[in-house]
Image (cartoon, rainbow, N blue to C red; front, side):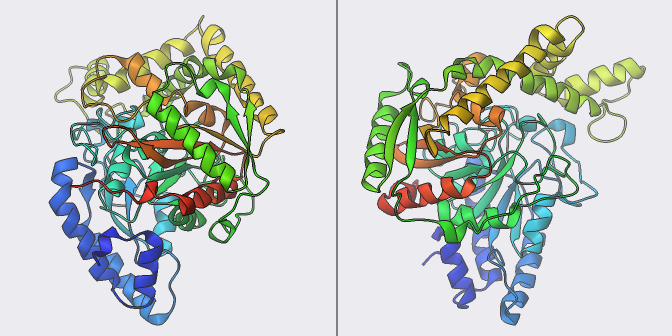
Length: 485
């Protein structure tokens, strides 16, 4: 058996029974990355030496019987998590040569758990994008069709997983950036509750929306990774102090008594008919597993796009003000004066989409417009969160499409920002409300491209989402389909 084709849980068994060593497993993935990454561009940086050193340490732990569930497991990490002395670019020219002096909490916890970090995965610049075409290091290609986008902004993490270039990957989700690429590449991806995983050392886009999360082949693999990453971190003031459940041992095969809500606003007339059919079939499977289906309404859903694209750019404008060519990052050549230094550094260092969002964010925060735009958007955000709260009084979980369509061709929407932003129409509400959401495969379209469905739960109920996803995946095989590369 090719070990790169296994799931994380299967690889655990191979390592524990010594059928394969961590070094052999890591070498298999590094060789596959060297062969396939030039085609799909999923990794920006591959840390061959660091990965093999971590694998040798993992083998020592395995021999001594000191292994954790992630010991020796090869993982890819989105290139916005700071890794000490390993290049962290955020997909931008601005940070193309940045080597952080410290470690993010996410990567530190992975390393302490014995995971092998293979490298840093490609992404939309500063996580701003829905197609992974804004990266300074070039677009990522979808392993199901290399002429199509993988989704964004965690497109590199999703494509790496779909192409079997890691057993799990870590992404970030500000408006759908884990769930949308997971849906478009046929894998599973979880955005946890805001604050469930520390943001310390995660380069910020929109601080009240950003959340780290795992991507993997199935819900069982995600449960293993989430167990390591979840939990309070005193280095992050937004980190939640709450007990972490045993995610893996709460997975279920049946859903008896589970009440699943179907929001009418998530099935508009413009929804792809093939996605509509796939969701209907998924509902039938969930009913067979013992769940009940209940119609619900989230009436403020129609305000999600304008609300998000006021709040997120406003926070981005503030967060990205630090990139000025003075302390770190890109610096323009031979500036004439301080104003020239700032202007040229930022115009040369940032790509068009990042500049667009900075300008939009600066505008809505400016004198005379703050109340009209930013403050009003925050009030609508509260209404959106209240919609979810009311819905969860009647149901335990919400089921929606993840995306309005399947993966579209590279270049199709790069000149139409509004069309690009609408790619996240079903995911951004979850971030605005701070809820956990997960996308898993539930079908394919007539071209064989993956279709994803999204499950949304109340705050800190990740185990409910994972249990539902696991039961569905025990009853179906969509998550086992693989692209031919």
